Every structure is written in structure tokens, then in C-alpha cells.
Image (tube, rainbow, N blue to C red):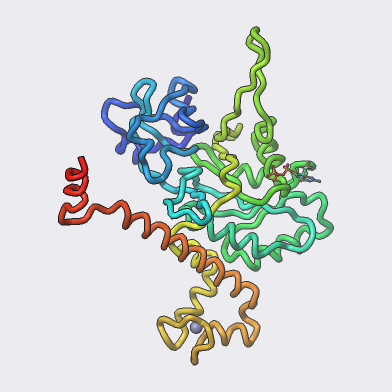
Length: 337
Ligand SMILES: Nc1nc2c(ncn2[C@@H]2O[C@H](COP(=O)(O)OP(=O)(O)OP(=O)(O)O)[C@@H](O)[C@H]2O)c(=O)[nH]1
Ligand SMILES: [Zn+2]
């Protein structure tokens, strides 16, 4: 197995724990990880210290340091997708890591769902990976260029591609986004065609299926891996957790997805303008003269609020876990023994 095709880099090698070999997580089960290492696939246990990790331990796509049957460390992530359980004051759980390209998948049928695409773009940017919009079911769309243009107008600076796994149209352009050594992941709502796209890219049924094997003692169902090697050399992550994604605890992703609104905000009279009717508000002016779609502005405001709520959750958790500088917590623990 060529680990460089899997995304192994000198940076990662430099971070590897001494005496360990690297492996990439392709599936996470309750207490076990399936990893790809230089000598192939292996099932390992995460070391106890990794269970305590605030981010929920190793995720699909993570590089881990292996010592035999044990994963002893998670190497620094270049990007991370998190799932936020609503209402819980917990840190976000990482569901996929080290993704380079996010395929924001939607279908080219009916009116373009711009608000939905905007949200996924903000999530993608906040993960640290670069998004591309992939519009599927092109075979069902009477005017593909118009459908693509409508989304491209909204998805500032993000490439927008049309594909049809049914006819094969556009697949090569998507494949070209995932060269050897890179990893893509798909996000998008149910039914838009993610599984069909994954299967078309992989050249075999990998998504929405379970591997069934017959080992002579009857049929056993083994659960399928969630990081797939593509024939072109890259990797594709398709994990159910990617369907409940939350924004990271900062507004950077939102600002990147809404670079136009962010830019307008710098032109308001007051630096802390809330764009709620303040005098000299450049955002209000842009809405008034039609340069900014009010629906897009509302979408921006909602996502800002969501990122802010997430920030509060993370802060609250950090406060609970922070040890007071005077050692009060340690004394309390000692006293309670
Ligand atoms: N005509 C046409 N149908 C498609 C295309 N892609 C997917 N479909 C159909 O759309 C339906 C949904 O496709 P899926 O690939 O299962 O969608 P999904 O996004 O994986 O859905 P979930 O698994 O629920 O998240 C299926 O009936 C597919 O056969 C396409 O390019 N053209
Ligand atoms: Zn303003």
C-alpha cells in the first residue's frame, strides 16, 4: 500500500510518535478502529487516553500512530468535520478528518436550493477543507448551464460542476478533483444522489451497501469501511455522520461563504454595526439598491447565530474543564478522598 496515495506527507511523518507506524482510519466502531497501514487493513484498539479526547477520539480519515494492535495517538488534523448535538453543552464530535475537498452535493431538479447550499458551504469552509458544488441528476435537467449558473452566482468563487452518474456526464471533472494523495468527502441532504455519485466514482458499489461474505460458517455481514480508495488514487469519505454537520465554533466559515456580506460589513459607518437599521449601514444600502439579495442576508444572519451558539457551547465546556490557577480543584479533589 502506497501511503502517499492515501495522503501520507512529510509533515505527518514529522509528527509521528517515535517507534510507531502510521495508519489511516477507514472506519470507527464502538471500541475498535479499522485502519489502513503500509501492510494493509488492520483492526486496532484506541489507547485509553484517546477515549478521553474532547473531540470523541479518532475519526474516519484520521492518521493515527500505531503500536501493534493499539492506536496510541491521533496526528494533527489538516481539517475536521464536526457534528454538534443540539442542546448539549459538549464539544463538537469530529466525524471526519483530513479532508481536502468537500463535495457539496445537490440535485439539478426543481428550483435551486441556494440557502441549503450556502449552509453547506459555510460548514465546509469552517472545517478547513475547500468546497466544490456538485450538482447531480443533470440528465433530468432541461437547462443544465442555467441551473449551474444560478448556483455559481451564489457560491462566490466556488467551482460548480454538473454530473450524472446515470449517463456518466461530468464524472471525469469530479474525478479530477481527487488526485492521488488527496481526500474528498460528500455532504448534502438525503436523496440528492450522494450514494450514486460515490458508487460511480469508486467504479463499484461502495455506498448504501454492506459487504456480505461467506466464510463457510454461514453468511456474515461485515460493515463496510467509510473511507474508499478511488481508482484514480485519491480517497473518498462517505460516513453517515456527515449528514448532521454543524458549524465550527467560529464565524470564519460563514464569512468565507458570504464574502460579499463580510466585505460590505467593513464599509458600514460603525465598526461594530449589527446591520439592524444603524445609520450608514452599507449592508442595508446594498439590499435597498438590489446589490444584495435579502434572502441571502437572512441566511447569513442565521448562520452567524448558529456559529455564535456553538462558540458559547465550546466556551462553557472549556470553563468546566479548566483547572483554576490556584489549584482549588486539586485541593477539593484531595479533600474529598
Ligand atoms: N436520473 C438520475 N437519477 C439519479 C441520479 N443520481 C441519483 N439518482 C437517483 O436518485 C435517488 C437517490 O439517490 P441516492 O444516491 O440514493 O441519494 P443519496 O444522496 O445517497 O441519498 P441518502 O442515501 O438518503 O443520503 C435514487 O433513486 C437514484 O437512483 C442521476 O444522476 N440521475
Ligand atoms: Zn451595517
